[in-house]
Image 1: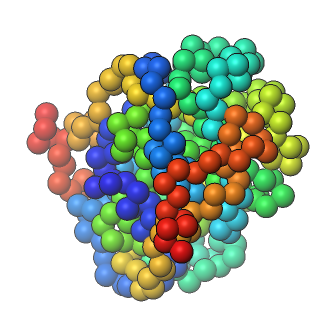
Image 2: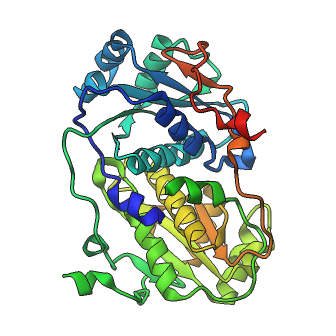
Length: 181
Length: 181
């Protein structure tokens, strides 16, 4: 049930040094590839980084600098061809969510490390990514060294859910929030 | 296993008229709420539309006009508070993917109906959404009247997966692509 992975997916920023087997990396990329893309453009590509020197180079140019960029065993960098999509940010975000969820399904931790355009440009330079591609984030992944608590139904907020139009509260059914409190 | 829902999630554009029970709608919104948001801002809100007149009004202003906007039993509209996030498009996209996956887990079909800013402005007007909020899509959901084939491992493309830097092919392990062909 996907809601389990959704609840177990918490941003992880401390990783054990153990490498992730390529079989799992392959499944994670597969999950990302099957995310929807605008007009089904399927233009996203991926770089899997394991080499320490490259991780160190990327660490140096990210803002803010965060240790997990150096210490994660792998970093996945999704990027897409702007000649093939008008909705690069949307496409890359949807694929990223599938990466997070498939990682969670393997018991792995991951985190969205955001790259605003000036940083993205530097990441592209380090990774030799051609001009026509764009990226919005990098995704460090590894065995968690910290264990953020999974979401539970008690975290569900019934505020901000409207019916028909803004301002009319949707009546939550099966409100596990209250039951679990 | 999340990869099942990921494979079963295909864009559905024809729906049966049956209403979706509120219990399932609640679980779908829950899945969306547990998606990551920038700096954990959790600023996304949702409108669930069932009323035909509102669906008809939205149909009229979308581009291109697509019948499923009128015929889907429900439309979920995620929108977020731009005063609380710098990454509205990313936040809304991640939540949308969880909506798609939780819908798929229930055997429901869904589709990303994109709203470029001029259309989004009109949708906000119809739904009385205040100025400070932004939206990027609407998500019709229902029991599928068409059944697009789920993804299989044979759909997995090993091209465009690089190792360390752009241009060096990642060696796919457990290449089910070949096994299944």
